Every structure is written in C-alpha cells, then in structure tokens.
Amino acid sequence: MKLEQSYDVVIVGYGAAGAAAAIEAADAGARVLVLDRGYGGGASTLSGGVVYAGGGTPYQKAAGLQDSPENMFNYLRQEVKGFVSDATLRRFCETSPAMIAWLERQGAQYRGTLCPYKTSYPTDAHYLYYSGNEKAWPYKLEAEPAARGHRQVAKGMSSGHVFFEALRRSAAAKGVEFKPLSRVHELIIENRAVVGVRYRTMELSGPARRQHQRLSQLAGKLGNWVPPAGGKLNAKAEALWQVNATEAEARATSVILSGGGFVFNPEMKARYDGGFKDISPLGTVGDDGTVINLGVSAGGTTDHLERMTAWRFMSPPSALLEGVMTRLIGHLPRSSRFLAQTARPLTAHP
View 1 (cartoon, rainbow, N blue to C red):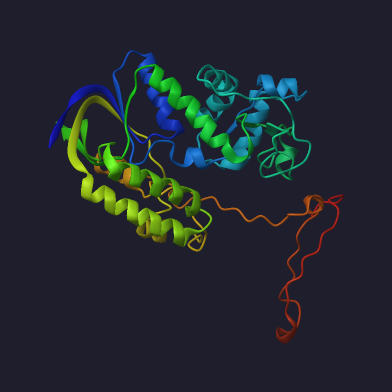
View 2: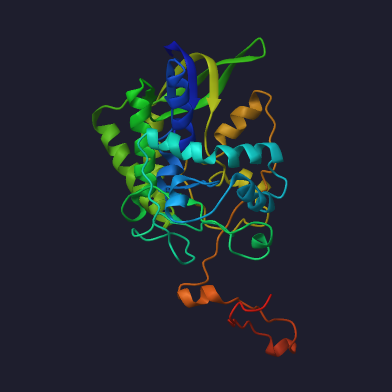
C-alpha cells in the first residue's frame, strides 16, 4: 500500500459540490486533496449548467423581474413540502444572490436575457428562465412568479461542462490537489473519529490510461441516451481500472463526502425506487451509492432516499404548453376503453 501524506481536508467526489467545498477549504488555508472515481465533473458536467437562484439577483433585476427572499421562500416551501426545514430554506433564499456572486468570482458567467416562454431548457439566446413551477397553479397563489433558472453562458448543452470547468480551474489555482480514477472504499476511523480514507487509484500514464479515458468519454456520451452501448464501454473501462489500480490511503483532519446518488446501484434502486423502477437513469456510473454507504459506515443516517425525481416530456409542440393533458379511461365499456388526449386553453381552473 502506498501511504500518502497528510492533508487538512480530503474530499470524496469532484462534481460541482465537491469543487465548491475544495475552494472554500483552500480559501481558509487548508491543504486539500480531492479524490474522484472518474476524471472529475460527474453528473454536473452532463447537466444543463443551471443554478437555481433568486431573491433579487442582478440578472433578475436586469430582466425587469421583481423578486425577494420572502417571495422565493413562499414558492419553494410549497415544492419541498417540509423535507427541508424552514430555517435552512430561508437561509438559502436569503443568501441566493450572494451565491451567484461567489460563483462569478470562480469564473462562472450569467446573463439577464429572459426566456419569454416555458421551456425545459432555453436556447442560446436566453440564460434566465422559469425552470420550475413558478407560474403554475397552485404555486402562483402564494408567490409572485419569478424566473430563477440561471444558466451558465455557453453554447448548446455544454453549459454544465463549462460551469464545472470554471470551478475546477479556480480550485486548481488555489492549490487544490486532485487525484482522478481514485475510488474510496473505506473511511479510516480511530477513537470514533474519521481521520482519513483508504482507496484504490490508477496512475494517469501509459497506454492503459489513454484507453481508459477514451472508453470513459464515449460511455459518458452514450450512457444516458443508449444505455446498452454505454454499459458495454463502461464495462471495458472498469476491467482496465481493476487490473491497473493500486491501494493507497490518505490521512486528514476532516473528510468531506460529496458523491452522487444511487440510480446506478440496482439493489438500492430496487429498495428505494418509489415506483420509478422503470425510468431511464440519468447520471454517471459513479452514482452507485458508494458515498452514501461510506457515510453510513461512520455512523451517519439517511432519510428520504425514496424521494426521486422523474420527467416525462409531453409537449414537443409549444402550443401544448398553453393547454392541459386529459386522460379519459374507465367511463366506457371495457371493450371500448381508450386513452384520449385533449388540450384546452388555461382560461379556467382545471
């Protein structure tokens, strides 16, 4: 086993959250090591690069939108339904404009070009949009609708990649050490305190590394759209890693777990699927529940694991955004049952 030097902070998982933690720790003077099972970025790089922020950000004001922390809170408390405490939710709403300013200091870029119509993702002409249900009933009854989806300035679907790269560059400039292809499998616990991690890592040199990177990049692109093809490529990359990985450990005063979810862990998904077992997973192979289970191994507890999010896009024609889908079934003889979809203007309450 290769014994690593000691650090002030070790962070497990290098998506946007892990990068933000690394930057804050480095700014506080800590010596930081970040370990990631991939090449960094995780699901953040596959995302649309959209940050939900409001309460009166500069870009909301530039678009002529009126918003306040209280108005934002009144909307979000309807969405979270008590799964986040009021105190935490208020703090998020009150510090939301400062969060955008912090991200800009790390290199992120935003614009106040408001998308005038409802969309799941705006075009390159728009970087501020209604990313939630702010305009929908009954949410708008308790809060004035305000666009809060702040999209990283970039072309097409590259916003997530550009967003993470800004954070990665900022962390690197502050001296954060990053070890990719490093999987933590155990927390070092002494006297009931976490004092480090044990992991396996693959050195980034030689033909095996180049082949692994090519396979991983292709698998990442295909995994969410053609899962069987992505799975085969991931399996090949996994075999390469298993052959070349070596044992190591790192000691630290603090260990931060910042990994993904568990949508690529069949056992956990079956246990907590909440009725979504047949959905197509979105994310990376790193979303396998490992980091969650590491936390549990140290005495941590979990909650709300059955709470998942799923989407079904039913409105390619934008005109359908001004109507409702009605499902008719059960009111006809069994031999004549059918599903019908109709649309009507939203001039009356459904």
